[in-house]
Image 1: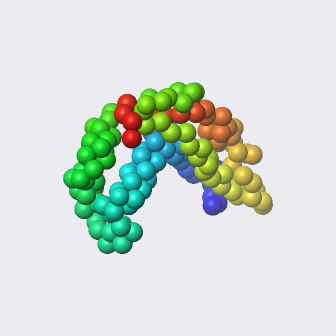
Image 2: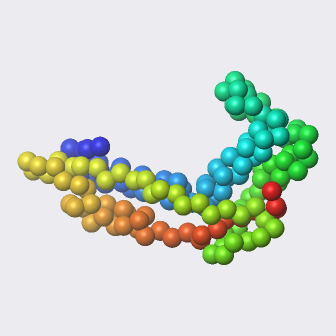
Image 3: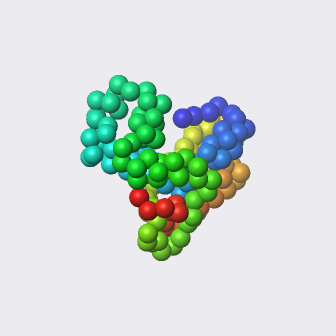
Length: 150
């Protein structure tokens, strides 16, 4: 990605840098893993097929989960839906739905036209360098968990 104007590149970095932490947040990682684990259990117990995942709408899949004959799956999904926060820990938490997932850090460092050459925005903008460095130094707890066992 490249820009002709340093100011526009900085605006891009400003906006993107607000999204980057969300992609590696424990909330996002836990939610994605819980959904994957739910679909896996539904598949293992023959409540969902691979074909269903290609042919049913998202709402139809959710309805199947919410009305699953395995009451534990349905109950845990309802608790997940009603969750308003996750818990975090540096140590595993037992008897809870607890996951530890390392997410690849994704970000863009665009090129910017600078005189008669192109340079990375973080090489010519302290603002952009600080935003990128702050993201790269962002730390999260190793584990995220919900207050139920799945």
